Length: 196
Image (cartoon, rainbow, N blue to C red):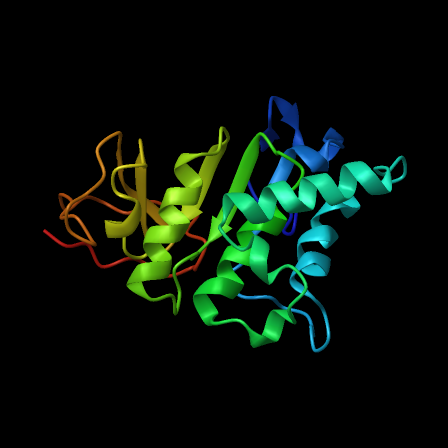
């Protein structure tokens, strides 16, 4: 997302070095929770804020409204379009944030803990919505159960290090990895404790 500078190596995004990347409308982002005050903001307005990446050209009003409606249909919240965002349940709010993340029909969607505080029924609704979208998903999760059948690769980090990388999703939250020597460059600056 370009929020932090690269400390080592190089970051490419959709084939371009991140410092030259300008096609931000191709990236969707879904946070854990909305991080701004949304006191009187409607569901449609929250989803519509995802189209701001289309500026300076922007979208025509009709195309924008159509994209908002389509995104809300995908997450099953068309009927709530004019309701205040804060009046929705936590799971519904998360589905609105997903609609905001996909409103531009991005090639890559990055999601941060999409199921934090979301009940099982809404987890199922979110997983169903994701199945219908053709995009690459990069999802930060602590628990993979709800999305296990959708995930094609799992990377497990422990204390700033990659400890597991496989096309098979782990069946336990923290797979056991062999004990191995540590090397410099930890993001945390601390030596990890390995599970053996």
